[in-house]
Length: 427
Image (tube, rainbow, N blue to C red):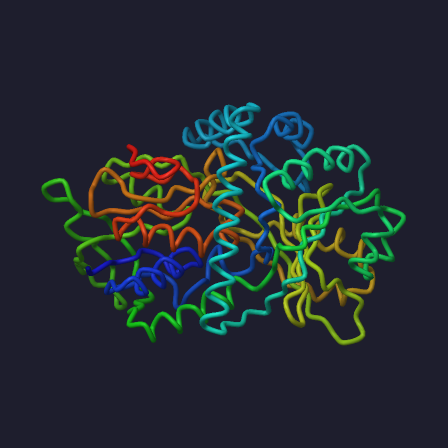
């Protein structure tokens, strides 16, 4: 089957890889000059099953109210004259109900666990390298209330089979010695030993190179203009090609993996996606051998940021800003990341040399991705992964390839066109 994948981020490239391995003839289209130059470019670097709980949870509404008006807030809502933003916000509040949070957490955990295993299998099969680390993720707590709440979260994760343990402040320093400078700030932590980290951009580019060896064709510098239908199926995708000339691309099946831009493209054919762009920020700091930077990936729950060692670089990422499709860098929010990093690790390189970046995460109100077959039988989706795109990419790509081959995906997740627990379902 000839398949066209729209989008060459980590999710689109992983989809192309698994589709090619399943025997399909795959072409990937992307508007950038190479793979992973947008949301996948400089994210936090974590493969973090222990982050299964979504942003939408019972504690979120109060926190959002407390953060209103703070430019450095972890979650910043910028009200706009945008109906989509307000509708998304209303659905987000609905997903904060305890029952919905519990259901969404279970689904995210199932897909994230499966994806981590798929990544490990891919790494063993191909030898792919991407500044990866299998030293786990250490969650640190500098507020007593957050640490006390962590005990119940850890119990739930352990009940699901994840290897995670509560750590005292001293034990946190034992796991990550670079935290010694911040020992007085710590109440404790939780260590998820089976979690991982790595450079999503490097991974995607190297996986794209491996996919080419499997026959996948990548076309860059082409923009999707619209999707057209005929007799209840997608007949073609219209693009502006490499020199700006309109061109039709035809195939047997099409996969939309355009992140935040999936929604406007699909709106034209009557598929309303509950996706809204959530801007995230990161800084990257070059390290010298004498710098005292962490080697274990960390999550700072007080500031909602992650810190990952990627070879000779330190990546600090986080914050969420609902401001439409604006991609301008807010330096104040990046400076807040720099400040927090050096509060915890005062000898982790040169703060003035930090490189700033921002990208748009394709977030659903539930923080669950949208994966599977639409009502058009040859149109498939793999989008809406929010903060867990890197964590879920391989599992989502493999599950989508299974669906397109008529198989039941392994994870217990509500895929489009496939019910939970192996039962065929509706959209």
